[in-house]
Image (tube, rainbow over all chains, first blue to last red; front, top):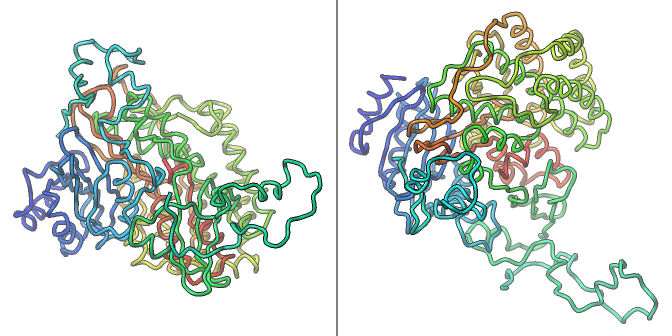
Length: 185
Length: 426
């Protein structure tokens, strides 16, 4: 854990941070609103005491309630990975600003997140499907997309490879929608 | 289905003109029989008729004067898997490229989200089938952070030992395939001798020849055994010499050097903007290697160098790999001398249920940074399992690197970036 990184981030991003900065193992995590993504990424990339120049990963996450876009960044100024979570993206109309103005390489990562979650990255000039065929209509990694043989998420239909108590299994799956109740934040 | 506008007639879809051929008996296999039937002519077109969706796609598929499209792949021996490249050419010069992915997409992330933590390890194995241990390594790194597991030191050394062996196998194969794509058949035969010996060695250690399923959360699946150690000893006695001999086949080959030097130059700033990692980034002059940049496992205790080059062309990317093989042999040597005693597995429950949380684990594979972002919701399955593959980012530079080069350089540039389509398509 890099305590000084925490102080530097608090000094630079006090206006944009949502909630406390969390640190665990070799990771520092900040949470921002999706609208602040360009400002925050620009700041952590350009500020002389941060210089997070390498975009390690860009991932979409569907928590069941909201969508998130998660950036992992690396810098030589800190021994920690920086995780930026753009939180609270509406599930029915997921939109997030693109990071391609800083990292051209984010273009395909955003295409992948669009393909899998349907998140629309505003500013990406090539936002089309990348793995699934162009006439495909679903978004496979969303939590309401169930596998045809997904016995795990529908209690009573099939046998799981590792059994767990029926009550826990029923609590985990919402019978009305089949959406797995999120306990992640 | 609406078809694209302003698409040129590339010739492949044209029907035969002129008077009908005289009646004669023809076999059903004769392609002319197919052409005479009234069927949808779209099936002969190199580009499937989907409407364009984005600005960039419309720009690509509208061709100017004298430009034509050529389709390479998905089934082409020099595309390292099932990659399809749609090239826009002006004469023999490449104007633009549109890589089409997804022919090998298996939805591994979704499968992992529906498997328990132990099963994830063998689900991620076939992604990077050339170097599958590293994908396992990234996954166990993330899971061990998620569960606060302490890995025994002997297990860490065994991981480094087997990982570096596999890195040598992967780099050796890369050198052979790069030469093969340029038309040289000999180096691949020598590459396979080396790689096969390493694969047999790892088979005696892990029990499987290619998809090892060897790393476990909290250690490795089995301790070193006699057969592995004796094979390794035999191989180490000639590894350095053999590497130099294999590299000498190409390093001093004038045709090879002339076809790779100055071709596909990826400069430092572009490489950073594209998220390129691994040997391709180090060939552009950035000494970014996770084994030093973000140390994990026992790499801080080992003595090795990070080779870098400034040219950033295909030849530099090749030479970086040659240097890395030398460094890997040094690491293996140190592992054998420093190998501690002790257990190879941490004590863990049979059903893993980590507390809710998030973890990112990344390791340096032969191609670059292999990453895994795992989110736990407290159940026995990962809530989100994100796989980051370096080849994906490297392939993304192809539309930038290719334009201006000749058609024949496509193979040089794509092969020198070392993509593995199993990892790209997930």
